[in-house]
Length: 291
Image (cartoon, rainbow, N blue to C red; front, side):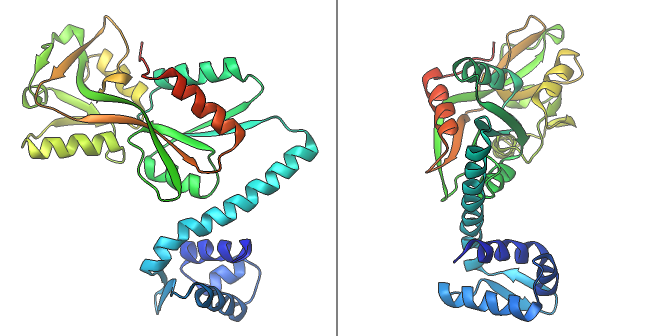
């Protein structure tokens, strides 16, 4: 399979239409149909189901599409590497980070990396875990990090710290230093959205404990959550590592909430030199601090 055929599969999945994909790829529909037939014969499986409503991925197609994206990504990265070499561009590191990787955690890691490798241009994108994986498949990120990143057969996944979930409130509200999950959830809560894996873990624990929280606000930014908690608008539940030291904030240990949240790295088996340097910096730092 060549790069153009791999790209064809991604476009067909996005458009669900041979005619629309043919227009986008500047070819004819019969030619594209023939190309798809050639790929399916080469692989020995049917990648798409055909129906009056359009194309949809088969089970085999769903399994193979991430690998097709990797083929396209690898080719594009090779082109970019050759272009950078000829144009003398600066080294670059493209980071993807989960929403719950707060500014405190990011700042410490990025500062350490910049001090050691000031010549590397770093770009950072925050998004939800499933988009981090997709971005890796499409070659938009060199390495991703955050909390509870999902498994992927295409990439290596490495844990670099573990932490628990704690309650966090304004000190002015005088929260108990130790309390049950049910008791803490009587407070109005501001939580990260359900697209975050830490929220999924928390919601599962709440269901098992038969606790219905009073969620009054949701935000996909930990800094915003902390600002609202400081103002006394609501309390929250976050990984302990993300909780900064502050006289305005007070932590409550949730005695019956036993959840281990893991900081994880996701990266290709053949990662860039800059990605390897970043991974090494994180490995050397060990358990991060939110102070």
